[in-house]
Image 1 (spheres, rainbow, N blue to C red):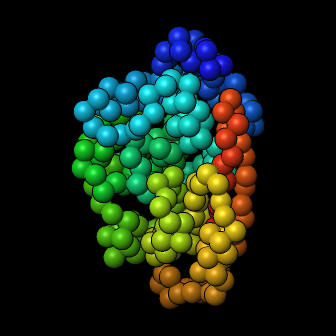
Image 2: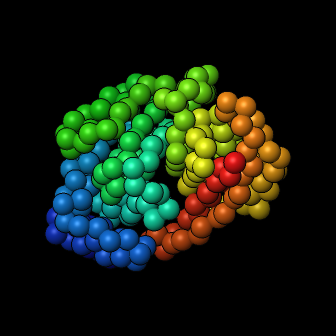
Amino acid sequence: MENESLVMQIGSTKWKHVIYDGAKDLDIEIDRGKIDQFAIHASELLKWSQKTNLTAISDPLEIAVKHFLDSIAPARFISPNTSLLDVGSGGGFPGIPLKIMIPSLSVTLIDASRKKVSFLKHVIRRLDLINIEACHVRAQDLSKDCGVHTAYDVIISRALSSMVNFVQMSLPLLATHGDIMAMKGKLTDKEIESARSLIEKPRDIQENRMSSFNMVVKKYRLPYLNSQRSLVIIKNVP
């Protein structure tokens, strides 16, 4: 596969087979139309990365696996017709691939970089996606207003410097029965325990409703690269 990546191009038949077969390895069914949309997103990512720091990855195989297959791995745990907030979306991961996989999602992508948000808006227009927006704002600023427009069913991020910080900033934005999803590589016991201690006590996070939280860790390996990944899901259980 490593040799194949040297001749593989974004959007080629080989590249699309990587997505299709890799999704099967993750127990996810994907149709050709969605893979075509991934190819457009990937092509635009590489074009814009020449002038904007969107990704350090340029190899087509790694883009397929590390960006797109990794982004759709949580799709099995996300219900249709729900609202999703992607914190630190960057090049649109995982929010845009998840929107493509589950078109009924209402998606908000946020990033602190204005240039990255410009790219996100461009891709949204390029793919003709609806019910999705990209905003130049930090999660901390969103959390100042906990009204109906900032209560999300799913809050997800791959851009994690600290899982505990991500959980802290997500709690005020989480809807009743909502899920916080932290996408990580290697996950240490210390990170798990820190997050668990943060959510152990019932807390008043919205409209004076008491909530408690359950945490589960789903581990998986990325196809082709055999890279260990972890999805930490924290469920709001009122």
